[in-house]
Length: 297
DNA sequence: CGAATGACCTGTGAGC
DNA sequence: TGCTCACAGGTCATTC
Image (cartoon, rainbow, N blue to C red; front, side, top):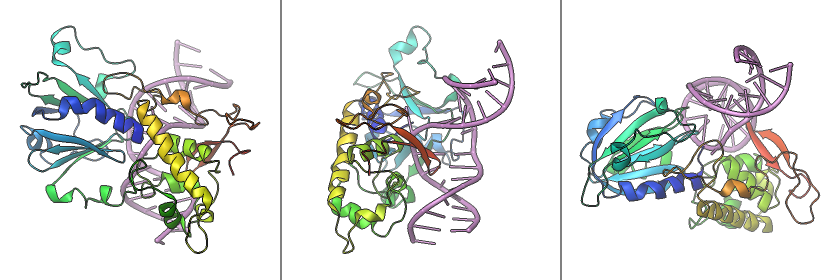
């Protein structure tokens, strides 16, 4: 489900509930998601206070008061839901449409404190491609999942020079090169398609052709770097994209799906002014790519 | 080394 | 109605 804008939207929804709050208990309805949950997971979390809830790429990082970090990834179908204590006291809680309580795998119970609250944060994930890990204090920058990530697309130092260095000599198509989290952190299938459309670049184009022989960026790379930043920034502002699932912890829908230029628009007209092209769907690296063959070169 | 492929899971919608 | 198939926002391990 979630790419960077969706994960950031989840973070913003959860932060007011989790930051500064103390975990009273953790309920595990399953002890394996994509990987087995960490050893002594419940005991290591009980009584811990969440100091900050951060995001890196598509990871959520809950920093705890003992120096450990709870790292969470939503995979394809993971989502968080906030159950407030007042809601629990009244009518039985109603699951948002399409969410089955059978897939509520992890439930964090928070202690009621001076800031009111209490209540629960529930992790639901039908496909169980998501996972949670506990990182010790020193592992935060060295853990393999985090160490190799590329720059954040917004305010992370992403620019044409970086992309030129990264693409030099690579024969993979742009689509694959950009899906690789070591290139730019947090991009996924939707936003790669959208950024390439904005930059008028074909997803099939060989990445290395955008770097000059001397390693300098071609002019088109500046356009790509800014297209990536812009699409991610706009999507975060819109609360992400909601396709088949709710994304936000408060149950509200993201809105960016209404602004897709190409994603899931196979056979529809290209939205670029003056372009008479038709959006095409092809498969690359086993995933759907949407693009306009007329104006994306 | 980089590139391509399969594997991991469940749910949903299209087509018959 | 009910079956089968393709496909879904990700990424890790394996193979070439």
